[in-house]
Amino acid sequence: MQCRLGCGACCIAPSITSPIPGMPEGKPAGVRCVQLDERNLCRLFGSPERPAVCAGFTAEHWVCGDSNAQALATLTLLEGATCA
Image (cartoon, rainbow, N blue to C red):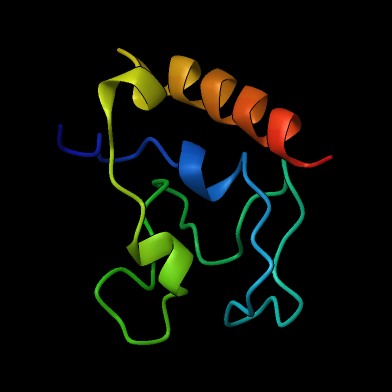
């Protein structure tokens, strides 16, 4: 599956513990990454500054569903299940 351009769910729902330019402590779950632009596109895509966890994410239908809303809901659920 290809990422849906402008989705941004993977840049909002999960926590990221590695440093991100502009967010040196990473980001908490549910917080929009500062590198996500107004069109929900990653400003670091393809850059060596992009965190490895972000670069390693692969869109899968079971995670991303059929819409941006489904992706956000699933990723939020997964984050909640793994934050304990």
